[in-house]
Length: 483
Image 1 (cartoon, rainbow, N blue to C red):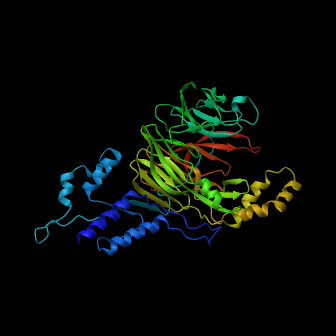
Image 2: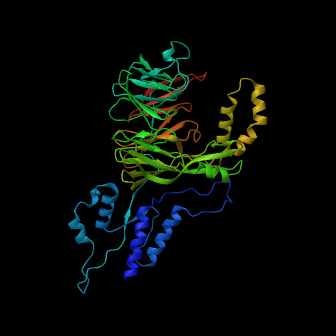
Image 3: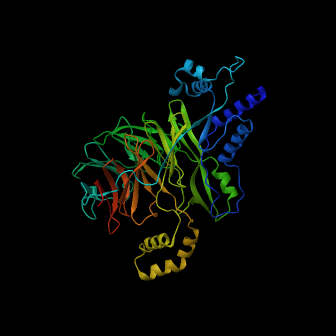
């Protein structure tokens, strides 16, 4: 290979390793005639074509990434992250593998190499399906009774190691603890802006150093409580570069991992016509002591609908879901049953794909959704009016394909396994899928349609339940094998 060719290979490989190559959904089915734009996979294919033209390497999978020679990768990682990658600790060994002596005794030039990411595909769960035990271990919440047992808008719940349960009720701005038998222990919080006061409450799971961590989405701050409900500290996020869209999550060292608001929303609103749908491009970021690090970007995020006064999330629209583990972050765009795992250096290391329920919208999906909407009305006349006047427009605005999972539908266990909440309208009863730390689909659980996963272990779940009169309660169930 000539020197100019080697230079071109190096340049192409540098561009490839500096770019995150991520799946991008096809043009919206609501606007199939929209002009095509250059997608990341198109850029990846262009890089592949250049390398193939040089005869240096052939590409077969779109999820393969280019890297440089071992020492060049080592130097790049040291420059960018301040520490070498563990896979290139022995530089002398790698030097010996860089090339072979040719017949003239000249060392062969180093060329770009391909490093495949692990792709794990599952057609069915590895182990038997699970169901809820007949009765919960504990249930908390009443239709009528003492105030501490009445919930109006539960926005989070966690089960602690001793079996006690912590619940966040947004309407009352309260955090409440109940012991393992369901007895009220304490209530903390109220509306306001002072310490221990909230404008909005979400519970963050798995944050080290404290049992209870509250994210206030309205005031953009994080409050830590001790086991007795007392405030340990409150930290404002203003000025830190952390601007979460939705709830953040905690990394193993306690820093926040989050998806931020897109910078281009105003520009998109100027281009999108009323009645059109569009999709944000979003990034997964990690708060560090010296600033915010972007782990993955250009990910298809929330689908939005443009209306006269602005925009809002699309009904049955897809959104980016993410969750942090000890080794990095799982994230996905809900286009299909697929998640990518990026490590803490920003390298995609695993891709999990599995076969879930069919996502094509059918008449059965529409019928169930209509039934749920009609249930909001008290009289037959009001239901007939809704069905005649409003339903046709609502139905026509629904997409032709469902999201694969919920926006907040990833829940990580301490061992790195992840529970995935399948999109609630995909099946008559809700499904939870458990992936092991490597991304293999190992379990499927069926839960009632009107329940929501709040917390879980390998063999138990904490659910938000809704009663006949829409009263809310939480319950812990053991998971058992179905008959």
